[in-house]
Length: 166
Image (cartoon, rainbow, N blue to C red; front, side, top):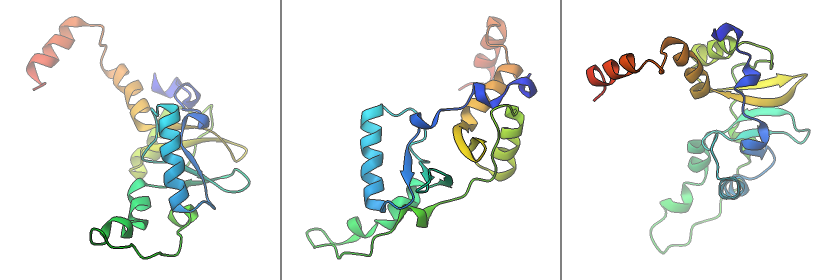
């Protein structure tokens, strides 16, 4: 049952997720994300890097669309023209706070409630204000879906695929 599955079983560890420092410039943040992606063969979170302050406390996350919006001037100029310098934007200026958090012992249902109620796809797992991991909506969905549908039943699988799937 999902109410008995703790988020610790689903969470992604912080070292497997892109993290940016709040005091980094957006330009440096973009470079860091590219390096992280290339070095780690990124599986998680590319579109939602986490942001930590100088004390390694979680401030929130940034959306790539906001990161790109802040450097749009780079590609908006006419071809061949020098792009005028703009004052650097810091990652902290783009941070979106999380709608809530869970502890490792909390049920995935608590994480799902936060996600559904706030239309978000990530919830941080915290203990004593320290980040232990991230729970993704896709992982929580997979757990709930497994309860609703036993994929081991070949007849049910065949029926659904032939009747409903295009």
